[in-house]
Image: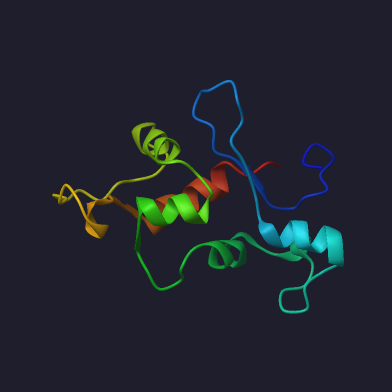
Length: 121
């Protein structure tokens, strides 16, 4: 469906591996099964800022790596690899070794750039 341009919003988060790390906006899948969602309309008509606001919390400038794992259904290794490759920007800070604040934070702006850059065209 991605190759046929049947999904408006899909990304490849791979970082040099032979395997693609494809992520698809869930709204696109629901739309294929049930038609456009009344609240947002056809996903094909959405612009990047609207899609970003569907995916990322709107009022936060940073997100923890653990949150990104849930949002993108990604492993800790993939988040680390994206950070190491310079695809997402880690906030420089001293982290505790355990607990909820032990997960590094990443800037929302770098996540927006990732979504813009890695989108299947």
